[in-house]
Length: 98
Image 1 (cartoon, one colour):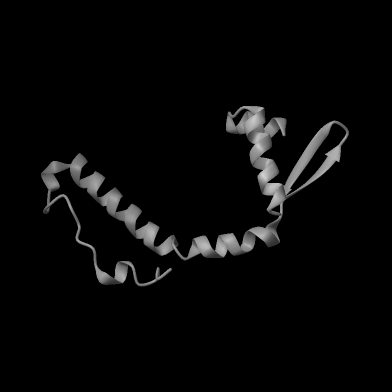
Image 2 (cartoon, one colour):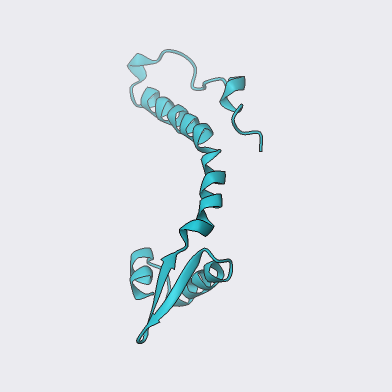
């Protein structure tokens, strides 16, 4: 757990609480190695979460592209080709009926 605490920059009690919740719902497995607790993700349990999150990937990729385009236009005003907004199209949301 110490490595997780170090990498996340969080306090050990907070990390312990989060790991306990993940363990309780089956998203991680744990084994003791002496005084250390070794945590490992449970890929089979995480798969449905990953598949659900994938449904939003197209939408967020498009949204991030819009943010990037707007930032680039603002940083280069000499190439201003229109208003500071991009209208949404119906097909931007078609894949996200959840």
